[in-house]
Image (tube, rainbow, N blue to C red; front, top):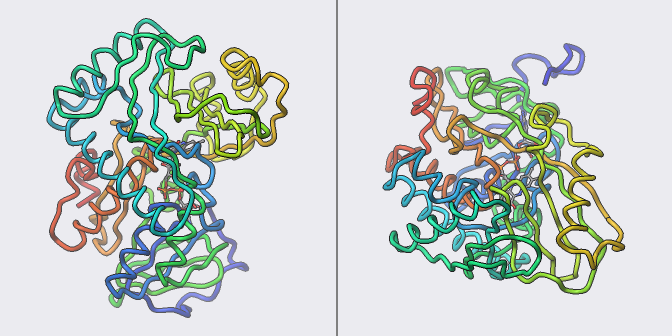
Amino acid sequence: MSVGLWQAPQPGDHDTHADVAIIGAGIIGAYLALRLGERGRRTVVLEARHVAGGATGRNAGLLLTGVAHSYVAALQLYGRAATRELWSITVRNREAMIGWATRLGTPVRRCGSYILACTARQAEELRASAALMREDGFQAEWFDHDPLGRGFLCALGNPQDGAIQPALLTAAMIRQSGAQVREASEVYALESQADGVLVRARGGAVLAQQVILATNAWTPLLVPEFAELIVPGRGQVLATAPAPRVLERVCYCDDGFEYFQQLPDGRLVLGGYRNLAFEQERTYADHTTPLIQDALEEFLRRHFPELADTPIERRWAGTMAFTPDSLPLIGRLRRDERIAFVMACNGHGLGLGITVADELLRLLEGTGDGGMFAARRLMQEAFL
Ligand SMILES: Cc1cc2nc3c(=O)[nH]c(=O)nc-3n(C[C@H](O)[C@H](O)[C@H](O)COP(=O)(O)OP(=O)(O)OC[C@H]3O[C@@H](n4cnc5c(N)ncnc54)[C@H](O)[C@@H]3O)c2cc1C
């Protein structure tokens, strides 16, 4: 992310004043624009690509309770109270996401989910997770066989989970927000001034009283404080042509490394296998690769042999943001507390995005401290 001297407007130029400049028009930036619009804040959204041009428009659309770790694994990492809180957050988020999609008229299905085990270790972990989740008051159906009959070992089900169309929902939020949106407006510098933060973007600068970074995996390219904290990870996906119905629920398996759903029009969407080439997939490039696409096709043939001859209609990739403890980051920069941020849902931004954005709004209003997502947990010297 660099801009040539000849490409940039003259220093000092800015054509817009804003109460808030949101950088990034993914699901999180769009939702923030919506809520700030309701509060009467003059908001500008600056987006390098186009609305939903990042992970939000490239994911698999699954709206799941929980995170990539099983309940048992999360418990080992975060402790029981924090795990219970994390799962509650995703339940609240799921309901909020379904509520907004319904209100804004974008596609949403409460079709239920299965988390499927592919190995004996995963099966044992899911079985123990189901028991602990019930103890903690969460819905957890247990299937000690494969409810799909397709070669998995067992499953943990949740009938309340579902799927959304994330790009349409994001675009609808942006429209509803009333914010000024500038696409193809990559932000390349943030300059702290006495009268605001000067946000320099291709296409023009904005002087804002408050800046919110909703820039997800790309954040370290703009703000060096995040260099050690956010690692990009590419996820690859394919979609078949419409096929007869083989699946009702959305599915997550193999510790979350593969995920799939069948859309109402019959297309089967399948993503994953980042774990076959972690190093190669640590990239911002959004092209697909034969290694991973072949593995996805092989998965399809193995578990859905009746779709073996169904053409693959589309292949794509998107970049997720991963953190050292797999939790999102919320906070303000210590060097200029007018610059706030919310990002890095570790591949679960549909499952977490609204609630983490709400947490940031509470932080900015002085009614919250970022809770378990406060970035200062990882780097106190850089963040408030
Ligand atoms: C392949 C794949 C599958 C996934 N599947 C699921 C799933 O099924 N369920 C789920 O819950 N989650 C899933 N995710 C994760 C989910 O998509 C993300 O967590 C979520 O979309 C993040 O939203 P966001 O708004 O934080 O970031 P993004 O959607 O990535 O938006 C960030 C935006 O900021 C913009 N930007 C960055 N830098 C700048 C800059 N300097 N100037 C201006 N703009 C900038 C980018 O262009 C981008 O549009 C998946 C992700 C991928 C990639």
